[in-house]
Length: 288
Image 1 (cartoon, rainbow, N blue to C red):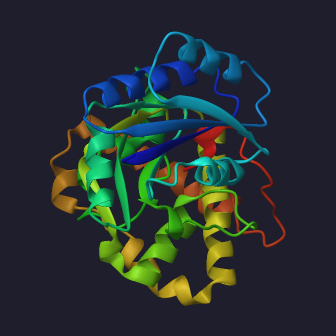
Image 2 (cartoon, one colour; image 1 turned 180 degrees about the horizontal axis):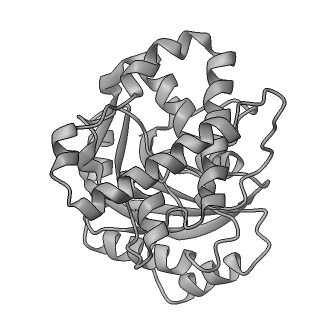
C-alpha cells in the first residue's frame, strides 16, 4: 500500500459524488496502490447515500466509516482505520475537485520520507462579481511574494505519526503547519505547485466574515496555548508583489481594492474573543 486517502464528509450531498468521481479518474491515471476512506461525521443529509451510490458503480479500494461530528474526529478515524502497510496519508475536503496527477504528486515525496506536503487550491470559476472580490487573493496567487511554507487544509499529506491536533481546536492546517515547522523546520512542509484541487470559496460577505473570524480565533488560540510557535508568524506571513499588482488590469485592481475594504472590516467587527468556542464546523468546506 502506497498511501491512505482520507475524506471527511459532513453535509456534502451536493459535492461528494463530483469529488469522488474526480478522485477515481486521478487514481486510475496513476500507478498508486491506494486506499480511500470516506469518514461520515454527523451528516444530516444524503451524503452517505451518495457515497454508497458511488461505491455501487466503481471497483477501486473505497470504503466508508463513521466518526463523531467534526473534521478532526473524522481525520482521526481515518488514521485509526488506515492500513498498517503505509505511513503516508493524504486528506482532501469533500467539496473539492481533484486535478489529474495530484494524488501521485503528493504521494511521491511522502514515500521518500518527506514529513508533509501540500498542493495548490484554486477557486471554482463563477460568473459573479462578489465571488471574484471575496476570493481575489486565491484567484490571483501571483500577487503574493514567494511561496508560503504552510499546509492547505483542503489538500495536504503527511506521515501518520506526525498527525495530532489538540481537542480545543476544530480545524487542521494552522496547528499542523506550526507544529511541523517548529519540530522539523520550514523545509518539512513541501509545496507541490502542480498538485491542484478546485474548491468553492465564500460567495457572500457573511460566509467570508464567518471564515475570517474562525481563522483569527483559531490562530490566536494556538498562540495563546503555544507561545513557542509565535516566532513562526513572520515566516508564514506573505507580502504582496507590487509589480504583479500593477500588471493587473484596472478592473482587477478595483476588485482587489474592494477585497481589501471587506478584509479590513473583519479586523474591527470580528475581534478575538477568548471565550468564543467553535464546537463544530458546519460542513467540510468550513475547514480552511
